[in-house]
Amino acid sequence: MAPATEFAHPEQVGGAYKELLVRLMTRQIYAETATAEVFGKAISVAPNWKEKALAAEFAAEEARHSQGLYDLLLDLGEDPEEIIAGRPDAADFWQLDLDNWLHIAVFNFTVDRAGSHQIMEYRQSSYTPWADSQEEVLADEEDHYDNGVENLKAVAKDPVQLAEFQAIFNSVLPNCVKRAFGRLTGADNDFCLEHGLKRNSTEEIVNRYLTEMRGHMEGTGLVFPPLSAFDAIKCELAPSSREILGSLQAG
Image 1 (cartoon, rainbow, N blue to C red):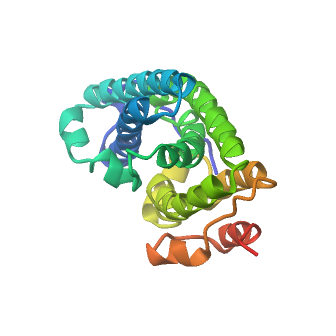
Image 2 (spheres, rainbow, N blue to C red):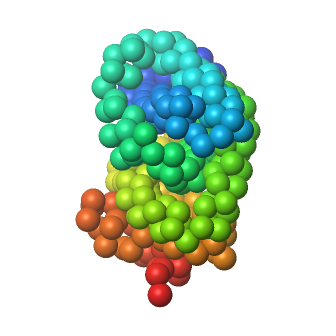
């Protein structure tokens, strides 16, 4: 496939390219604003000052990411306030109980990293104003995920907490995969790949995410949700993704 044409200015884009660009950016601003709200809530429910301070830091970073997308959408002639108003409440969007610290710990391990794998695609986007803004976003998200992994390791030491973490994870991960990565195939996916709005197939991105996650889960006692949990919400999975999920299941 020939290299995609790059666009450096908003007035250069239009038609189907702009429509899909705005849809992808809408998905991202939904996730960033909802995540800012999750971490904002985490300040009051975190179990100690260290976690409260980190939650405040992460909320500020997610708000900054959201503002960057807000400005990019404005440049494209869109109304970011109207777009954000169309997003479900953060708790419903991510299917979380925001008064429960373990829900937020599961979120930090699961959802934030899914966003990072999408950002890895966006930083290579053929729309360069968007691509150029994503390197800093990805660096912030790496720190968030490190905290999520540390939380999992801490929870794994307590069988009762780990069992609760597992139950929450069984609900959150399928919803996360469906929301963060979308449909496996279709004309929109083909267009995005052809025109450089993303560089890898949805199957490849999902598998990269699940494989990384499995590496952190091994040895902790946490396992992937049963495949039936994904099927129950009509989350599309490639056979290769099912194989990864099936490789670490409850015995």
